[in-house]
Image 1 (cartoon, helix red, strand yellow):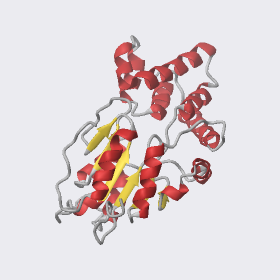
Image 2: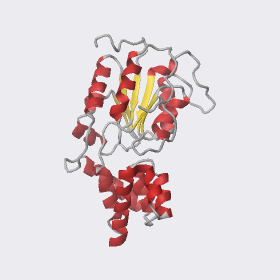
Image 3: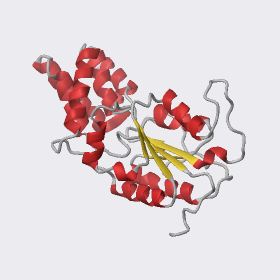
Image 4: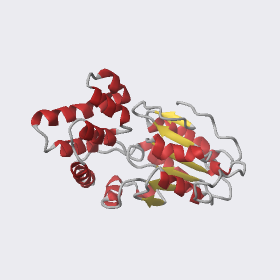
Length: 269
């Protein structure tokens, strides 16, 4: 193990998503749904909560097992549990931005308390610690705002696992800028992919939202890992799995391999 992660002069960089990646759990989604539905009539409230549970259980396949076309459209549009609450709230139950924003803010406060059950995947935490000990820089990039984030990171005890935390990243555009900056590339839309052999290989991006977390890395020819819990199959990645545990071998292989090899083809682990 001592030499397994010996790498090039330029450090490897792992860019990790936060929600649904560094931690997981549906308690925040359920709380968000409850807060969003609080002002609805009883039947409407029950319908929204039931719709969220349907999606959490079946993912995008829930669209094929409902007879409500509006609900089906919301299921197809939602990339994760957060989005299904917003999609159902707007499309099916008439909630506006004010209600959803207030519910989201209340949920982030709730998440920093022990009352909200969350899990940091043990295998991922252990691997991040190993990678950092061998010189890999770990960047946590999240679209979540800074407010309350430090408290949540402290509560989850993940601060020691990362070198840098970037809040309000503004993915996907913000992640594109971040990755290009890490590679020393121009930030403009006219900038070309770095043509140096293996240059982009020293960065890997991992997350559960293909458009936000995976596509920006794939565009640069960088390795990328996609947690596709809800069966959306939104696009290719170097490695794909339903749970992050399925992706750990790919992360380990990336960190151990020398630069200059071609990125592995998309696969589902």
